[in-house]
Length: 277
Image (cartoon, rainbow, N blue to C red; front, top):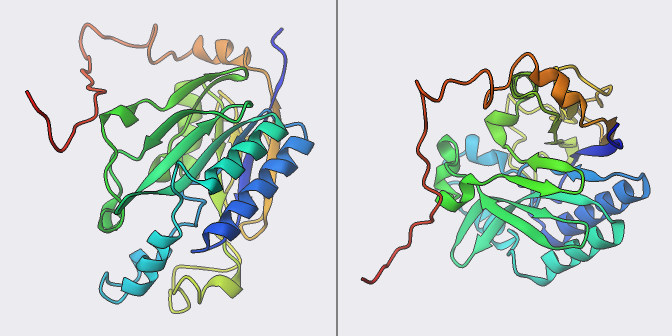
């Protein structure tokens, strides 16, 4: 029997347009999960410095100052802030998948870094195509970002974001993929509505926004959810060998596939602005 793996899914409020506060919050959550014995810890999309919901509620022109602050507080991958996070992961001895807004020179990207228990970034990727109005803020990921699965001492772990990670879709993904799924979400308190330019939004309820969950390979929820406005980390002890039982019914890249009828050609080489021949 495979040894159990303790997985953890974050539901928490970021430091909202504050890089240092978001890094400190990230480190605190990593330390808490390490003390609770977690092996794998997942963070929400762009937890650093928080998801800029105002881009869906205000025009780019009226949002200029807000976006200027957002870019300034996005995280550079090779930076002292990331070094602090990596050291915290190493001290906690767990595997972390961190979602953040990455600043690379004059552009920003929806990025994820996979950090192993030694504190090393073993995979870094960017969202291939930001959704709708997100494209006014973040750039596209290149072909090398198609890789999203990493081998770890605790099994293979991928990272999917936004619409792919909506709660119901995640439950279906767990069942169809015969895999465990950690849904990691941000939430917001009422006092931060104004900071996010959302006080006049009819769609944002605070405290609220959280829907974190952990699903098994049969699509069943493995934990009780937190309240939408509650901060915390969900934990579940999982047995990876149960994936074999789920795949007896559906194995989408095995007995349930038909590559003779349908196949996909993938390019994984990043494009460059300038090439010489």
